[in-house]
Image 1 (cartoon, rainbow, N blue to C red):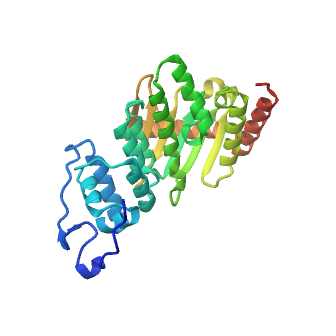
Image 2 (tube, rainbow, N blue to C red):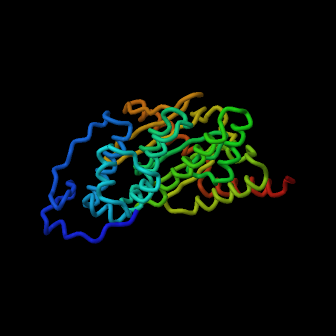
Image 3 (spheres, rainbow, N blue to C red):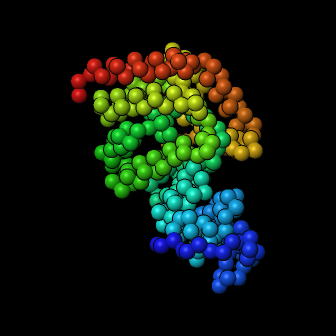
Length: 305
C-alpha cells in the first residue's frame, strides 16, 4: 500500500497519541476486549507499542506504508494483519519482533502448545537464562542446524513439510530480539551433549559451533558448557528457561513430551533460579567453554562426511 501524504501536526489539531482521526475529527479511543477475537491481543499489543512511542495511528500508518484505517481496523481486531504489516510495525515500534511472533502464533498451529505464549514473553524479557540438553538453544541456532533438526522430525512423520517450515521460521523470528535497543542479556548454559550430538552432519555442525564461538564474543551473551563430568550434580534433566521481565518479575518455562508450560509461582521460580545459579557456578567458565566448543568443532572438521 502507498503511504499517506504528510498530515497536519497532531499538536495543532489537538489529536492525542491514543486517538484515531476520521474526516479530520479526533475520535475517542475504543476499548478492546481481549476475548472478543483471536486477533484482539495482537491489536492491544499494537496499540500499547504505538502509544509507548508517542505515535498516532496516522503517524504509524505513514511510517509503515499503510492507510490509517488499516491500522485502526487491526487495533480493534476488525481485520487480521498481514505478516508484512507485523514485520514493519515491529521495526518502527522497536518491539524486538513481538508482533511478528504473535502473528505466527495466531496463523500457525505447528508449535508445541504453550511455546508461542512463552515466545511472546521472551521477546520482551530483559534477561533470558537458558539450560538446554541434547540440542543447541533455539536463540543460538543457525538456519541449517534448525532445518536439519526439523528434517529429522519430518522423516519420522511427526510433522508435515508445512509444519516443519513453520517451526523453522518461528524459531528464526525469535532471534530478532538481538535487534532490540538495548538487547536482552542472554545467559545460556548448555549440556556438553549439545556440542557432540551430530545434527545434520559434519559441515552443519562445524558452522553451528563456529556460530556459538562468534555469539560468545557479544557483550550481552554468556555461553557456558555443563560438562559430562558434572554427572549427578547437574540439577536439570530437561530444558529450563528463566525470564526476567520489566519490573523484575520472573517467569519460568519448561516442556513435557507434548507441551510447554509457564510457571509464574514466585517460590517455584525462585527455586529454579537457585538451581540455575548453582549450575552456572559449577559449569565451565565462558573462556573454558569456548575452548571446548572450539575443540569439538575441530573434531568435526577432521571427520569425513
